[in-house]
Each structure stands twice: as C-alpha cells, then as structure tokens.
Length: 231
Length: 253
Image (cartoon, rainbow over all chains, first blue to last red; front, side, top):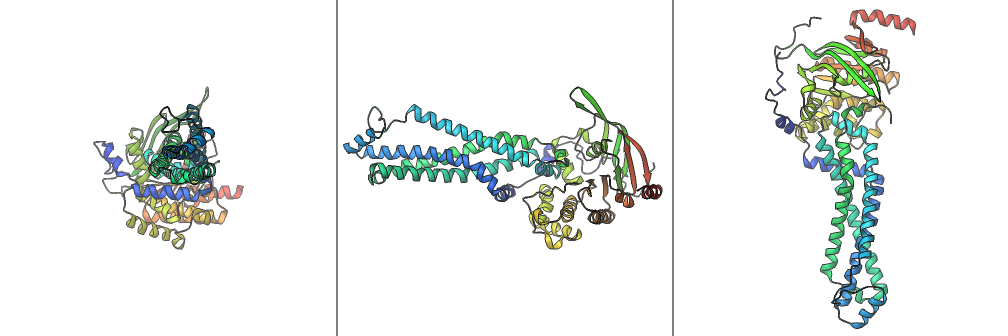
C-alpha cells in the first residue's frame, strides 16, 4: 500500500500542526470585523460591563476625591466629608473603604460577569454553523478559541474604557456638587489615573473571564455541525 | 470493479475506500443502526452521487467519507490513509488541503466578503496574503463572480453564494469535493447552473466530486450513482445504466 506524499510516515503531528496557520494579525482582523458586523449585538453584550465598570470607577474616583480633600488639611472639608457619610481611617489621612462598599462592588462585578457569560453563550449558539464551517475549512480548536478571546478582549477594552470614563465623570460631577471646586483642585491626579487604569483592567479581565467557557464550547464544536440544515 | 490504471503510479486509483463500515447511534436506550456494512470504492476524478431517501444513512455515509464522523466498525481510507488513525491536527489538515466542502445552506461566513471567504482556507494552509488574493480572484472569476468579490453574503443571491462556496471548496486544490445537497436550497434553474458548474470544474481540474442528493438533475452529470437504502448499498449504477433509470423516473414523474 503506497503511502501518499502528504502523509508523513513519522506521524509527526507537531509538524502538521504548524502547517495549519492563522497569523495573529489575521485573527485580529477577523475578530474586529466580526464585532463590527454584529455591532448592535456586541453593544448589548458590552453594556453590562460598561455599567459595572462605571460603578467601579465612580466609587474609586469618589474615594480619590475624598482623599484629596482630606489631604488638603482644611478642617471644614473634614467636617463636610463626615457629614456626607464618609468614614475615616484610624489615622485620619484617608477615607475608609468599608466592607459594605467592597461587597457591593464585588456583587456588581459578579453579576456583570454572569451577564457576559450568558450573552457570549448565546452568541456561540448563534454562530454554530459559522464555527462549524471554519472547522470544515481546516480551522484548529485554538483558532476558534483565539478569535473569541480576541473579540472579548476588544469588547472588554472598549466597554471598560467607556465605563471608566463615564464613572469618573459622574464621580467628578458629584464631587463638585457636594464640595465645590476644591474637589477638583485637591484631586490627586496620580491616584485618579491609577483608579481609572484599575477599572479598565478589571473590565478587560471580567470580559475575558466571561468568555472563557463559551469560547471553550465553541472551540470544541464538531465540524459536522456545519452540515445541519435546521436553525 | 477494476479501476483504469490512468493515474500516476504514486497515487492509488481510489481516492476513497470505504471498507465494511457500520455506524451505530445510541438514542437513549435504543440503538439505531444507521449503516449496516458498506463497501465502496471511489475512483480518482469521478463524479459520484449518493442517492437515497432521508433516514437511509446517506448523510452518515457522506459525513464519514468527509472525515466528519468516525465509523463504529470498519474503515474509511482517504488516499489510502485510515482516517480513524488521524489526530486532531491531521484531520484539520485533511479538511483544509484534501477536501473541499459545499453545503446545502451555502455556509458563507457572514462577516466576510466573497473574496475573504475564498481566501480563508488558503490562509489556513499557510499561503501568503498576496498570493491567496490573486488565486481567490481567479477562482471567483472561474465561477462567474469576478465582479462581485467585495460583496458580503447578504448582498448575494442563493446561487451566487453557492458559487462562492464552490470557489472556496476549490481554494486549496483538494482531491475531493464533498457537496451535501448543493441544490437543496436553490430553485430549478439556479440548481441546474450550479450542477453544470460543478461538473465543468470537476472535469477541468480532475477533482473527485461526491455529492449526497435527492436531486434527479444531478444524475445527468454523474459518472456513477450509489443508491442507499436502509443502511445498505441498494445498487450502484454506471452512466450507461443511468439513462434507463432516468427514463423510468421521467415517465413516472
């Protein structure tokens, strides 16, 4: 029985694995186009992330503003902060990040992750045939995984940036309304920037976390799904 | 069934060999025997149709030939390689380079243009973008869509989408093109055009076309027709016998 030329007799799978490729740039391009075409769908998936991240950023920047006012050393701000319901740390240089605040934040982030998970699972179901077709064309599991992770990363970055910006704006507006212009002038810029960065980081992280299972489901899909006529 | 020794000595005359294949599906406690021992040899370059009513095991056999499903017992060889022995990478490679798929529902990837759909398998195969685009344009030209390469699937008719699918199936010069009811979602005239196109391309490129179909129009162009009934091969007809059968169907219809 003659062995055809295409079949390596040593059965070196790794070599064959490398013969099927999807360059990273191409993956990014496909993921980006996929998001753009399904813009409205992607928007809804991202919306819960925007809300959760803006809440996170609102809280963090609000704390930064309060810290800034405290650090200015003017006793009247200290009084107004206490009256506004802020607790102070024992040494009195920072406002306390209470356990309740942390819990609410955690819960909102958790709900958001579940929301993303749900939306992404639905997206995978909708795209069963498309994924199956790609696999018929020779796509490896990891191509599909990578495409979904890239899409989620892009969605996460866009949604988290928007959310962080919106939250920060609301926090600044609220600060100015409560404490007047010093809320802005005393704001430690470095700390606020760090808060924003953290919010974006958390957002991208959650987006990726939420897509992990759906992407795995998609990657494991059998190419024969592409043949299904119904749905 | 002795094949004509017209192929190069390095490649065997049979591009697909199905040997005593059975397939059992488990539905809860019930066992359904979809295939009850199939033997089939498919010659390189032939145009073969698999006919049979739904539920006959036609699709199961078809998926097995395409490496999309594995037999419960027996063996399927593609180019004399037992596909049950292949790992995930090798199967992906097989699907990418050796087999072109055409679907009843066209399955053009909706987010990509016609040209991008055709170039995708070539990118998977490691071809550089420039060459892939050139070849993609040439293929679209050959299926009569030279001027529509930048259209999205939503801007193409069913027949045009199937043409894109044919161009995509031929992208990596496969040995086999598998067409699953390629005319099932098309009107009569368009279906006829697609069949003629498939026939022409298979003759020009000496590619083996295997199609599962209900469509009697397909019989006119087939070199052989395999009739499946109840998980077994009912009969295999060559072209000469076919005209008789078609005549009978024609009078019956």
